[in-house]
Image (cartoon, rainbow, N blue to C red; front, side, top):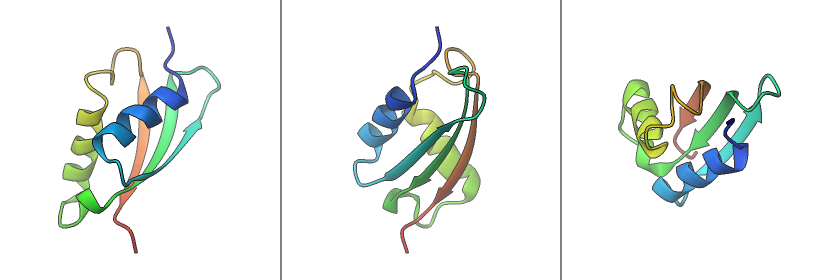
Length: 77
């Protein structure tokens, strides 16, 4: 069963309440998404660490219900 974009956003916002999150369904199949996440929690972290934090927020859904997620992460200006 595909994962809804709103569920991805909800999980990310639960982990990073101050985050700005944009989700785009890349293929229209509920399995391939792009996400842009801007959060203060990423400050001082490497890009790999930022992505690991987002994957952690998804609570094991990556590779299962959620097949692919192209991530762009950054800190607020």
